[in-house]
Length: 112
Image 1 (tube, rainbow, N blue to C red):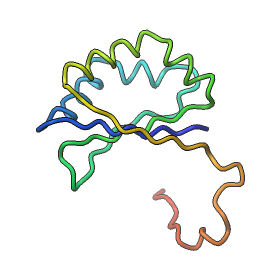
Image 2: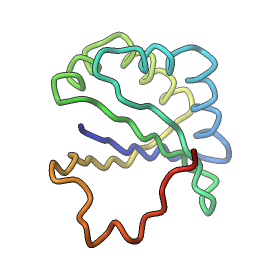
Image 3: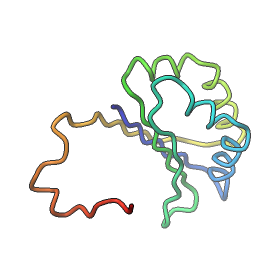
Image 4: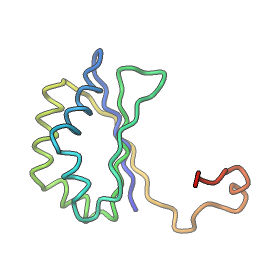
């Protein structure tokens, strides 16, 4: 799995308004329904009101390439322009070995 963290940065509430419109317009639902999408969620950093973090997860690079070629990208680009957002991007590839035993003692399990 490939995880892409996209930090959308704007002025005042523009990044939050962008995320809200992405959800309300149905774009997020459409992306989540794309083959190979494993997650598409927005988060708001507590110490930075001008930034929204998108955690975007894909099965593999092929799925990301198909997404980038889809009509969704045009809609996303329009909304980024509308809200005058800038971006910072991080990309992570899942470790095939998983979480090391030495780290597991620091992890509390999920709520049931």
